[in-house]
Amino acid sequence: MAEKLLGSIEAGGTKFVVAVADFDYNVKELKKFPTTTPEKTLAEAINFFEHFDVASIGVGSFGPVDVKVESETYGHVLNTPKADWSGFDFLETLKVAFDIPMYFTTDVNSSAYGEYTKGSGLGADSLVYFTLGTGVGGGAIQDGKFIGGIDHAEMGHATVIAHPEDTYEGGCPFHSNHCFEGLASGPTLEGRTGAKGETLPRDHKVFDFISYYAGQIAFNTFVNMAPEKIVFGGSVLQGADMPKVREYFKQFNNGYVATPDLEELIVRPSIENNRSATIGNFGLALKVLKE
Ligand code: ZN
Image (cartoon, rainbow, N blue to C red):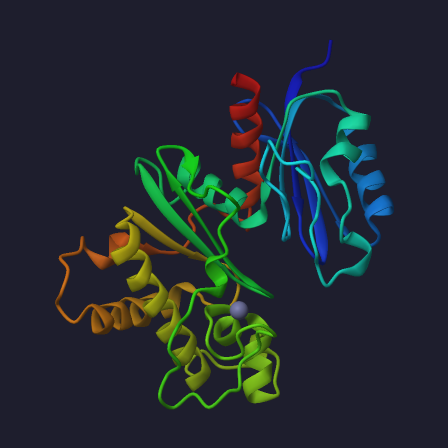
């Protein structure tokens, strides 16, 4: 009998990452492929797992997705701009192929769980994770559980105030320049400068703006929930930007609430190779197996 393994599906809007690991989260095999149609993409994922004896699978998907277990559309992709995927029954497609326990959540929740169990949040009871990439999202964990009742959180669309010098009209179709994603996603870099984010020097003013929004959202998060860790993942901000984010946090706080050392509070993910979500999915696979 082959070794029992944990499975991970990180379902991104542009690429899928599937992986298997032992129960100590050591990755045994990992594969990436582009996100195309739901049928084709899931067939590729299923084909990958068929080569292993998988005990359970953790799935973190781009959204919006229905994560309410009692809901009729649990495990479905909801109304998304990726037309083929709207209404797709993601979880059932997997369940037909594999009759094993599965945990289904958002991609950002998976990353949050990875950092909570094996990364920057190690030893903390509470953590809020934000990712700044093509989109912006956030997930919150308290005592091992995701915070959220009627739906998953949509922290990327929390209201922020624009930097006084930032004249960008905003990139969110719903909230223009009044929300975090509308002002701090990857595409807003090009929206402001006409150049791809990765080609811009780190001292470009635009990263000061993004740090301003991250500092602002970190402050809001701290006064809302007082978590032990606030983690900023994704490619838009880098480690070098964190001092600025902490500085803006301080400005928004203006001496009001006592905080821990900001270098301990506001951090980057510590799981290497961009694997926070994969590690998180293994943790969620293990969690659902034990339940
Ligand atoms: Zn928005």
